[in-house]
Length: 84
Image 1: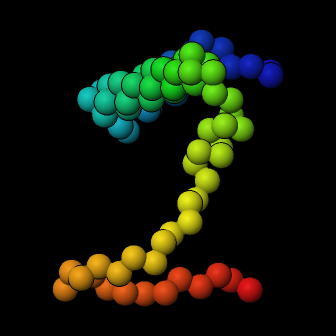
Image 2: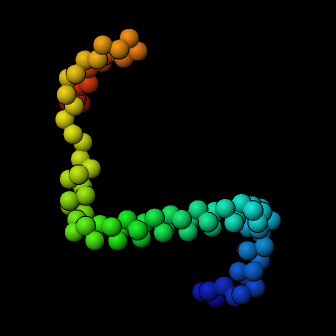
């Protein structure tokens, strides 16, 4: 009673195919495969470069914004404030 039989899974698969269609399911599958491949490549690059997750977090930390005023007419000058 804890697990489904093969017939249950076939019925679920048939309902999913009827709802989404085979073309959309193919696109979702290829997108998921590309995402997994990109993740694996990213992990390999991180290990190959010798960087750790702490190094990656430090590199992704926000940087200080300098007060450089542009002379462009399309630039809007605003001042950012921190929450108190």
